[in-house]
Amino acid sequence: MAEQDSGAKASVITIKKYANRRLYNTSTSSYVTLDHLAEMVKEGAEFVVTDAKTGEDITRSVLTQIIVEQEGKGQNLLPIKFLRQVIGFYGDSLGGLVPRYLEHSMEAFHQNESHMRGAMQEAMKGILPMTRLEEMGKQNMALFENAMKMWNPFTQMNRGAGAGATAAPSNTNGAAAPEKAEDIDALKSQLNAMQAQLEKLVKDRG
Image (cartoon, rainbow, N blue to C red; front, side, top):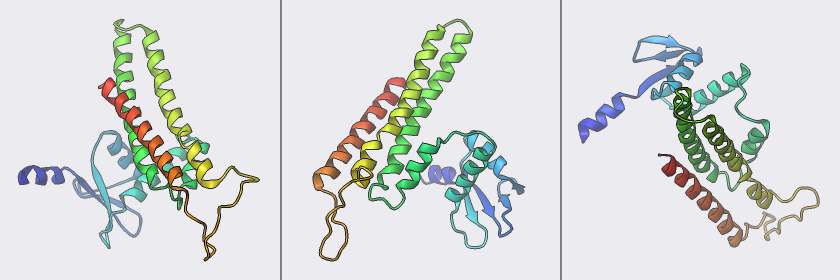
């Protein structure tokens, strides 16, 4: 078991980022760019990015930089509405639920996309009709759209209905009172139900 664990760790590539913002691939002993890292992600290579001076793990910030750079090149995968919704959840009491939900949503979307690619290859050989591809494409889009719409009741319940919404009651210290327990339970129930649907989709596609 120890040998397997050490082998798994050895497969993770370490990228060091220096003060001059240069990135150094320790496995190839060469400097790389964000484009190189983007290709590594697409190839399925596992890597962590650390600050060369402090050793701090800065993988998240570097991956975010890759997304910003790709979006700047015109490959707009993130809708403005989605970006606004994500930003709105920073500092929100429900923000902790977002990472888990997005992870499950993207995993299900990825599984569906993989099956669609395989079906397309078979269709080119005349094995499957094109209508099958169209159906899978619609399911793929519906999955992502449902993931986006799922947060609407969350934001409305947590932030109020906009103009004219009644302010939340305050306690004696002037702080906003916590949400009702039944509201939180309802939100958790919706999240668990949606997660179950996503896992079922992945299982059916598997």
